[in-house]
Length: 318
Image 1 (cartoon, rainbow, N blue to C red):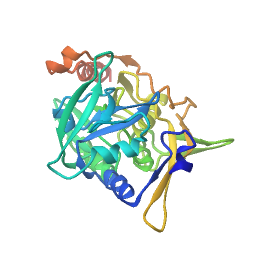
Image 2 (image 1 turned 180 degrees about the horizontal axis):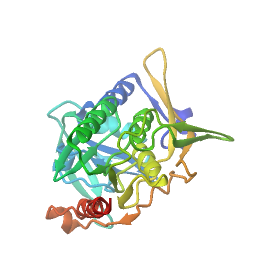
Image 3 (image 1 turned 90 degrees about the vertical axis):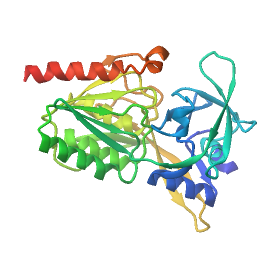
Image 4 (image 1 turned 180 degrees about the vertical axis):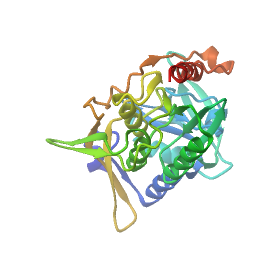
């Protein structure tokens, strides 16, 4: 653990056997916890996104909230994975998070842990426009997304809102597959390792490139979400709406040891097909729509409304 932490990279991590099991369970979409993706930004542990219909969301956690301590233990020297192991626990038990939002004074939030089962893709069709919300890129995402594409084609939808807000990322292969639905076999992302670079291409034909598309992003859209939105933006396959994305553009390799422990090591950096960096800068939307606390409290979704407005205009012009 000490050797790995000496790299100074927040995404390079050692896992004990128990931590490795939790990490794999998270990718499979089932775990016991509060339902919040957390990450490190500017050296501070913070909420990347609360998952929908989870204890974290019900407790009011928001993207960008800083986590100062967990059950009284300060997070300043914790890795992300250590923090996750502290936050998770047995179903029905509680965890106390000391939080800070913006410049406010620190405050405590007590959250009861639950079994979290993530349906990574949800869809809805409203007046010819399908919303495909992807909450994470895990093992079942591609299958669920393909079901959504089939439904879109069968229903002859005229527009698609691809909602990646609060999606912290996940599996690279899932991102490649999903971007392929628009960009086909073209380059989805460029992976650079020191002096070497390789283009990672799409894996299927562009089945829905003919359907007008808007991608929704925000500060909780990270990693694989930035790969998909960046590729669609580069090729002009979608209008990106929302706020600046998180800026997590590094690649990790995961290796297990014989005793069940594992390491996750940063090995490369991602760039969009046009060579734009994602890391620390993120994706800048084509149309920026800010969200205020008042909007959230009153259930207004101005970003989604803007997406539908753009699609209506594009559909009318076809």
